[in-house]
Length: 160
Image (cartoon, rainbow, N blue to C red):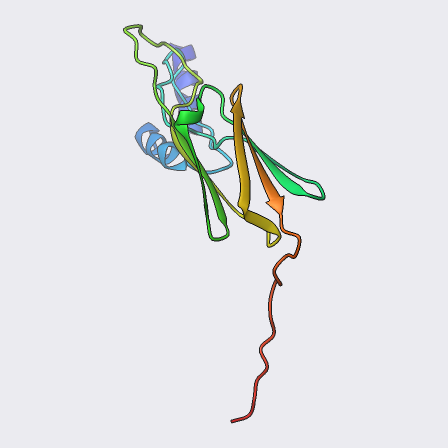
């Protein structure tokens, strides 16, 4: 009895506004890029849910191009879309839940759609973008333009 009372008091200290409110707040905070700790009852299986984290990205540069690598384990190239519009590179896709008759007790796998968008640098050639997909890794090569457009232009003000 004393043991269950202590556990109850500990849970109350961890969830000061009540379990329902904290579960609601945690659901809202899942989309934060830094994550949010979610309390679950001991012995209760975690449910499958949408991507908690965006795919990891690495961007490298050399003298001739930029390389963007995106980790997409469990996806095929048909599940991913790459789009360049104006100065924005957008990578999106969806990892679908694998349906079986098996009962899932616990899963740390992520399912659902994702979108990552990046502003391209001024010297990126929007017409020289290639994409490869192998072993769950999307690799984009973005060529650099020889003559990068000016970052800005000062406009002369004339008296009227």
